[in-house]
Image (cartoon, rainbow, N blue to C red; front, side, top):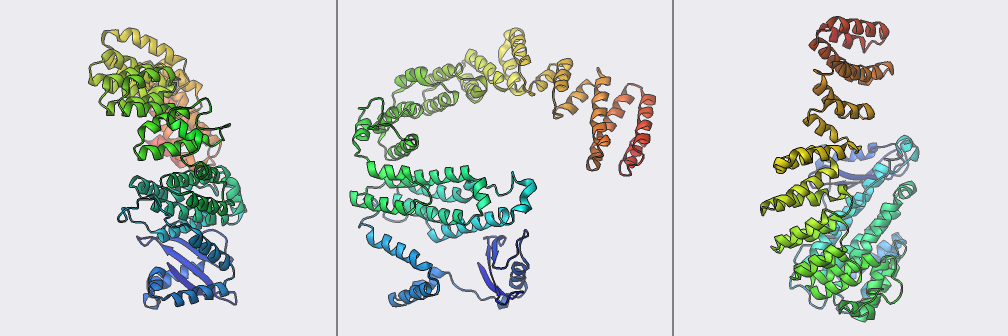
Length: 562
């Protein structure tokens, strides 16, 4: 971090703060001057130049943590009081911290704390990193709205993952390592900085990102709920956390974490459900709230991490988490039950694939293929392509060629990709002529452009050309022209002319090189079929028509001389 006072047009010097990444690159920069025209102001540039060329003028100070470490209690109190006197807005922040520290019940963390930190955690670094990310978002997407008028769809858009992902990953690693207290500290730091950062965003950035901001807030809510449920908190401690959550209500409702604390694990319908006693309402006494699925997943994560598998199975079944329920049945060895219920209840290929993979992990390959065979017939073909491809590989390993062939056909019908077509061809053997006819007939009804690859593979040029004629896309055009140039030269020449003339007639000077490339292809086809005179006459007409286009004419003359 570089900080400096820079003299400018104002009476008071401007305050500049520059943050550098670990590799020396500029991460973010802020200046108190009124400059707002994109990029960084000259005052930021001046600070960077001074640091680069006049390093001896830069005073290096140790981190704040180091400076505070050697102070006595009296001196620390003096620092805090002086800051509060100079910046009255800090008083409320200090009071809130004092309240949290003094009201938190003893033994805040889980009953069994790790003997030593399992994973290094630097909360100050997390806060700095998130502040830097929000500074970057504001500097790139904020400022004068009029500067972004013509690219409004892109301006101000950002992904919360860019800010949250590394810290979310750290929190989950801590939970997996059994350090729920440290994970909670990380999540609380994330919540604090997320609230501060979003409050500081320009209003029009917030309006353009309402959905993603809401989703990110809910994700923080579920993370906090999972971290709290992973600890052995007393009723007094849970009440303290509910009070703290209420302080965050301006950021989000934090409904999931609040419900987790209020119900805990001894909420009667929940406790009964985990014992296998539940009705249509699952683990709820009344109507389930809109976030019931999210809270159920949080509880299941905790139960799985704690090895409480039977309770996991009961709760997953009670809450309608069928895929997770069946996967856990397979993991605990109830394979026949998992397969039987999968045939009854799984209706999506991705759920079938998840169970099949678990069964393979359990070395239950035959059961996995049984489930996969069922999955090939559920859902739309395009949804089942991944399952079908997986089934082909697994079936071939154990010599189930009939299943592999069936799965390969399902995979092809999912996207009409040439690679899947070739797999069917390789597996079909003597059945290929009949299967080929059926696949081509079904493919003909599809609007997928992928079928062009299949038509070219089969030398079905007329069919490939017909797809191009019905399409507005030119993605496959060059390949079809190349394939058809010997048998259907006029078709290829006409397509090349249309592409080139569209560019030239519109005066799209920056694309003239592309027009020239299309004309070169047309010329080559003319010459391939001994029609040089026809080509020269056409080119002469173009030169006359576009004689005043000074950038295009040299390109046309170059084509003629080649």
